[in-house]
Image (cartoon, rainbow, N blue to C red; front, side, top):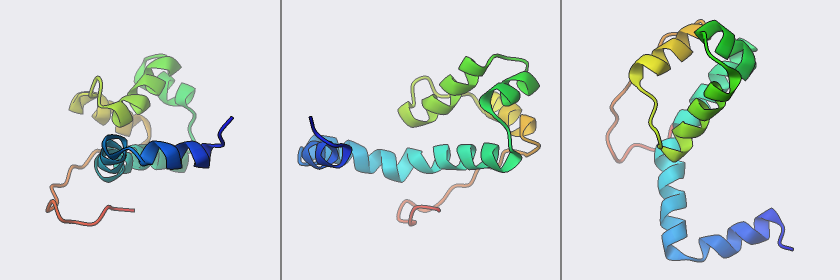
Length: 103
């Protein structure tokens, strides 16, 4: 059985896999990182966020997972409710395509 690092190295040797991994890392992981960081900063579990949004924890898990897969993409209204449940507000920013990834 391969370790995670061995599997990753083997998978990234495929040009198609590597291109998709780089796209996700550049475009989508920062969004997920921001959402998970905001939830952690608020000190809330998925269940607590769900309660504040009037939904169930699996819906929050799907929302967070959708930010990685892009399927289905959460609506702006849903993201605004999520932000409000964390005591935050949602803000979008358009950056030049050549901008480095935000931390």
